Amino acid sequence: MNLSIQLAPKHHQGLLLANPVMTAAGTFGYGTEYNHIFDIQKLGAIVCKGTTLEPRDGNPQPRLAETACGLLNSIGLQNIGVKALIRDKAPIWAIWRVLVIVNIAGETIDDYAKVADELDGVAGISAVEVNISCPNIKAGGAEFGANPDSAARVVAAVKAATSLPVLVKLTPNTSDIAKVAVAVAEAGADAISLINTVKGMAIDIARRRPLLGDITGGLSGPAIKPVALYMVYEVAGAVGVPVVGCGGITTASDAIEFIMAGASAIQVGTASFNNPRAPLDILEGIEEFMQKEGIENLTDLIGAARR
Ligand SMILES: Cc1cc2nc3c(=O)[nH]c(=O)nc-3n(C[C@H](O)[C@H](O)[C@H](O)COP(=O)(O)O)c2cc1C
Image: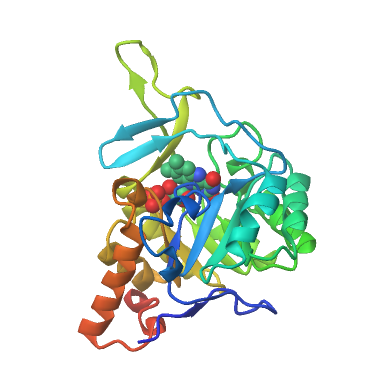
């Protein structure tokens, strides 16, 4: 069986994954944290925690709240900053078989471009994923991704700053996600990933106060799967670049739904908190499904529900 997938067909280097299973940014650390739990080298790609120009402490606690079928988070992009990432993490990744994609964020367009520029040519980094969809920071993040024009401006600046393949991660918190997708594809995105979390909140009735320290957060997990699947279906029908599906994927059959909706690859996020082996279980489940159905090439499944 052939599970490999080219995620950046228009890029001179390309981004060839051995299989379609990736981890979602912010839910799998730098990969190193999961190394002892299962053979992470078997995955298609690891997307590391959102990285900014300077280190960030993130938002005030509490930053996590469980909901029915989901998780609210308001981490606020706590991270070590791009310089420490290049110094301490990239050399580890450089000897890995699995590809590592660095998720990047910023408060200004210039921030994004500077982070992308720093990462250009660093051994161990195969691509960047531009997070224009974080709902948990005061400036930048989802503000850029909510609007086609500002989204395109970020992507154009990142493309000009790096020779790496560029994935762009979209927010569901916008009126027409397909319009944003078309704008970022025209601005040069090599692939589009979606969705980031859905903005939400919870209230602690004993304290009569919002439960999260930052008041609002982003909802993830099985609760958002139907929303994410619908948006992947919409976007895959609107753009000519590969789409990476994300949002509530917990089992292999969830992943196959996204692939049939038009996703070329998928990301596993919150599921890893319940079951740290979830990405590998999902990969093995996809292989089993293909075997059972007599499918030789993963590409035969992509968009199967659209035909
Ligand atoms: C604790 C936490 C931290 C996250 N951090 C990031 C991040 O740094 N960058 C990003 O693009 N997405 C981040 N996300 C969003 C996930 O990558 C993913 O898009 C979202 O959670 C939906 O997928 P899921 O339902 O499988 O978790 C984070 C999600 C969670 C739960």
